[in-house]
Length: 180
Image 1 (cartoon, rainbow, N blue to C red):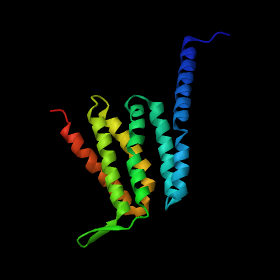
Image 2: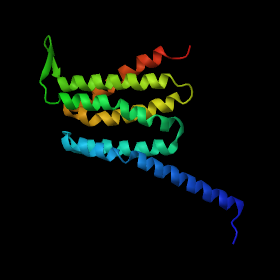
Image 3: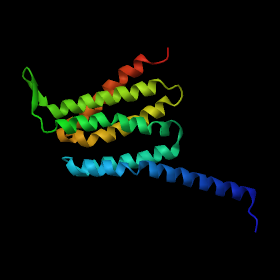
């Protein structure tokens, strides 16, 4: 029994998409180690697992989708390392006081790491012509999800610091490199 041309095209398309999905799953598999590591020391292990699950699922979705979304995965994950590592290293440190205002050094790491991640993602996004928005959304989301477990040490304010630092790092770079 011979298949029609339409059936052959549909079969080829399914095989192509299945292959792209398998490649994306292999690409995201090492992130399971990152999720396990963050869950082992995060103050809120459920948050680490939730962020990690979202990180893995979005990595698979972005790699499977391709184009600007897939190009954003590696830069997004790499940009997420500063907000993950800085607060992790500073979590046991005491407070920093400037005048009468004191805050946890971990919080400073969240804001600083978020700002560095924002600059890294913003510089890369600003250098792109087409697909800048998709890249910025994908890489930014991955960077924030990567850094969130470490910033949870400072509580909700740590997560807010991460987000504000990221926005503060991204915005100036995007504005400075905006096309005239």
